[in-house]
Image (cartoon, rainbow, N blue to C red; front, side):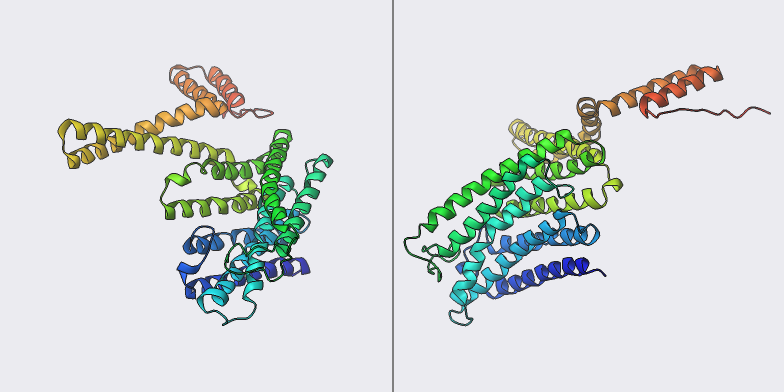
Length: 388
């Protein structure tokens, strides 16, 4: 085993150990006293799911050590694991059992330090460097320097900030300096981080438009995962708290999974097929759900019996499933996958002609034409076995 492989899996194991420590503290701490981004349950689930970043990072770094994406994922995962473990430690030392553990305030400060570096590392730099670990062009170098500057400004501002700690508002920053104006630096860095992420998304769009062949297929995986994450953002507030948290955690985990598939195993999967099925079943689910709700409402108003309305609506939706699926598949293929739709139509026409054609040479010519039109090979040859 090479030294880079040992280092990669060592960092991954460190992330797992820190996350486990955070889970232990979460189990023994007073949940009511914990200040989290969502809830203690969400923080636990999110931290476990976030282990996908260091795991995928270790896989990439051990197989392609020169690709910066693997090391980027490892650093981003390490940042989140440190955040979660130190947050749990500080909660126990400062709130659950005050004074039971040393350095509670410093642990709380360490937890405050990591969210912007992890965010920029797991998103902005990922969008800039994916899939080969290099920038799309030299003109994007200033953006990398800005990301580094904003990260350093956030870390320095958080360390020197004289305001109370973010996660622990009743605890003063043990390293804070009065009059340094660090709080404004921290706020500005947080806003700048969002702008940098959007700029990095723009670089991904530019790279995708210029990409061809294998690189374009790899980029499709990341674009697909990012699109699911962003499109779900307006939906999440409409869901129940636990459901929304679980959905967000699952969608976040799709980023490293998509990257891992694209870099390590992209030839084994057809991203166009995945996108097509997502479109088909997403539209089908929305259609059947709307039909069910409308049917329950109309039948309920007509007969005044809610149980009957539910039964009738369920039967109606079950009966609509197959025809709706076929219709939606046809619409999606015709609108977004025209080549597949045209190929299918060509095969249907050929099948109709084949039933009425008796001339073997004409059938062979038709078959060669269908293969050229649907498969589009460079050369077509047909050998016919002669009758004896």
